[in-house]
Image (cartoon, rainbow, N blue to C red):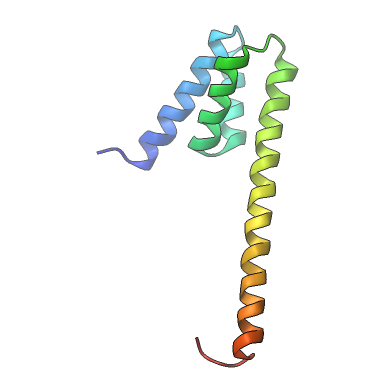
Length: 99
């Protein structure tokens, strides 16, 4: 059975593998994985490293920060959309009406 922990472990290991394949330290890969915080983000970062093969650590870190920023922007957008939907539902049904 494939559980969440295994998914995280595989994503982290794949990312660390790509980082070390480029000649960077394993600790950098582990820190990037920790900062990205999800298998999807880690897999995205690993794909970027495979495709672009950056030579400088600064470029690697910049991409990690860009991915984190995009994820945060998406979360904020979703929270805003959810709040707007609740607000319009409240206006349509009234403040104290049951759903």
